[in-house]
Length: 166
Image (cartoon, rainbow, N blue to C red; front, side, top):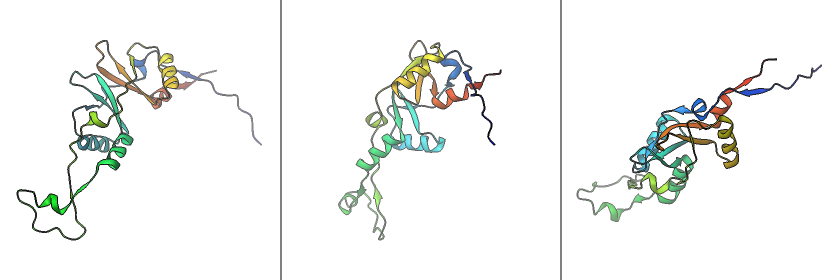
């Protein structure tokens, strides 16, 4: 026999974006190479990273999807004609081996150049409303100088939900 439970009411225990955010987020420079970005995302197990300019201001977002789309369109391998132009070409490539041309593409060339931000003192309810309205999973938190200081993810919001005591 099943007993009906009263619905549990969840309460958000955060007042502002500062309460919700993960501070000091790992970011990548806009002038980094795609190869550097792949290494950073892979090593840290991240799906996205904020892209910042020289002043630390967010200028875009780089996602695994951005990299996959770029990779699908750009990867090429050196053909025999490319190898013979090298200063010291390899003597002979064994069957099944290829030489990869290193991709010089920069993060700024493939990132999504849209940034959604909130200030540190933005009320937590407004942060959630913005995430829902924009249909995004992350918002960047900036200070008064527009420098990146944190990230709020949907998971961060959920972590701040607690059951209301009756």
